[in-house]
Amino acid sequence: MSFLILFLIFHILLSIALYFVFPKCGKPAVNGLIPIVNFMDWCDIIGKPRWHAFLLLIPIVNLFVFVGMAVDLGRSFGKLDFKHTAAATIFAPAFIGYLGVKDEEKYIGPNLIAEKEYQQKILDAKESGKERTFKKLVENNPYKKSAIREWFESIFFAVFAAAFIRMFLVEAYVIPTPSMEGSLNVGDFLFVSKTSYGMRMPMTVAMLPLLHNRIPIVNRESYLKKPSLDYKRLPAIRDIKRNSPFVFNWPVGDSVYVTAKRPYSVEQVMRDNRFAASDPELAQKIRKKAFITRPIDKKDHYIKRCVALPGDSLQIINRQIHINGSPSENPDHMQFQYEVRLPSGINRSKLDDWGIDAGDRAQGGFHLDNKQVEQLKSLGGNVIVKPVVHQPNPGSLFPQDARKFPGWTVDNYGPIWIPKKGETIQLTDKNMSLYSRAIDVYEDNDLEVSNGSIRINGEPATSYTFKQNYYWAMGDNRHNSEDSRMWGFVPEDHIVGRPLFIWFSTKEGNIRNGINWDRIFKSANN
Image 1 (cartoon, one colour):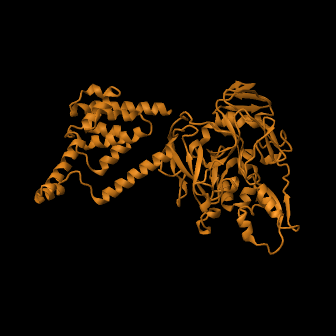
Image 2 (cartoon, rainbow, N blue to C red):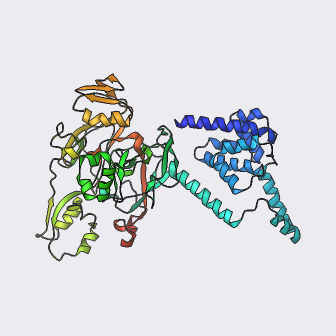
Image 3 (cartoon, rainbow, N blue to C red):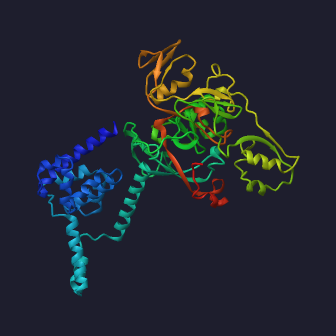
């Protein structure tokens, strides 16, 4: 179901509810069905100026304005309890419709005016010294809330506002792995703008607020797959630029085994039994076929650098990325894996001063940028710093087809063309390995490839025109990054947003190791 259809259904139900409630408030029933007029009359009913209705035309602001108007309408019928506030907030059409159709529910006047007048009576009694009248007014105040309710409502609306901001505007994100090490480190906490590249409207609508896809402790998914909405993205403030970091949903994370260690895609563990060998919990889940399927917006979040845009041709030659035949600009702190031998008795604190922490010294070698390589070499002639040469392993690299793409490594890869919306390609036996998932899964077609014959949605096909843009993502830590070289293209509908700045940072991802004060408020787009 599309977002527009859901909005129209909501508006129709709300108009019907107003049609029944307006006569009780001295307004013509038909006005409840007339757009704009119904909201202006609604303002009259609750005691707000009629121009207030036009705030409903302002995106983001309109949701908070609407919730306030729904709550005030209920209070204008004497519905002052917390349960009434919650009902008006959660589903206004049903609450307002109930007020309209139930004969016993009576309109008592504009709530905002009545509440203001009552507060004025209290103030007048206090200022005039009428202590007895003042106490009586305070004790009988129908608008008074208990301390517990004040706290509960504050928490309720704080969660509501935070969930709304997280869903539409800005989300906090923590760097969990060293794939962007040097630029973005393990333990960096970021704010990610969801409006920069176009606000993606929610697709999964039934979920626990402030959780992405898992409930802590109980380790269960935090959402329901149904009902769901179709993909819709508002216009972008800026375009994704080549070599800029971006946040997206893990494209192959639609079917995953989730363990305490990490999530694994079903495709990964089918291709490589080393994952199960290193994670006993995963091996057990594989035997039970206990995998989880996730919608697009509930796949895990990844952050990488966008190294190639739609329509680009990418090739990696001796560790250097080439875009459309020309060497690409490299990040300042791009890292590779090195075999390092240090003299005995070296002061390890010096390595920490150079930014070579425990994470950099893991995973079968040192992961270093050019500056760190020179710093290590400066320790003397007994130091050996040797680049690790990665052997061809096309079965583990996208598109996992060693027969058609032999010899590919993480350092010598491609060439590969990045699909662009509206561009048409001729389908061949060879390029089907590259583009079959995009055609079949990401663009929701029924693809059949058999004995050299290609059929799309039941029809023979020799060409295909892409419906959306795709991007190529790679980590700055080139030898310690699970990225597009392993799982392929990032579809446009998977893009979450643009990292803004680091608002907190712990050393090596653990607060016990200390805080990286020099990284706080540092840009996340370097």
